Image 1: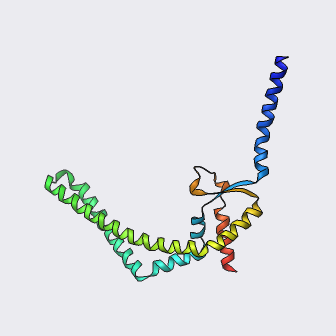
Image 2: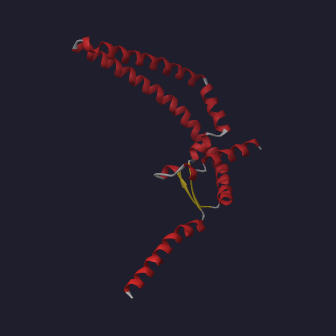
Image 3: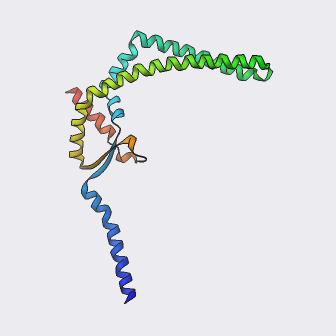
Length: 176
């Protein structure tokens, strides 16, 4: 009798284990989306970022960045080549020069990033109503029961992502 109850119990547990995933699917699909990426990859966003990059202030900062980066790389190369034959004072002076150049480079990089981030934030706010509309449509048509922001998820296979679909729908809305 104990053997029969034990077998029946094992069969019941196996059945429940097999049916649980089906119960989850009955609730709807699970999907993830990176809204920032979806918005910034739209044609509209790319045009806006290109416009920011075409502004004179941005161009001059970018030229300064390129110049500083080249100078920094040259200093690093020279230091690595000559460090073995440099005196202690020369090494200290070379390191200080590298730190100063790196500081300048970081400052200009920050200016470039701030310009792009400001444009990105404006785009996110501007496109928010359209994004909500697209998300509602995709949730309905795809049968999504749980939608998570990609940044909140530790791991998700690419098959769970609807980011590209959101970008495509936003491009379609902009074209209309």
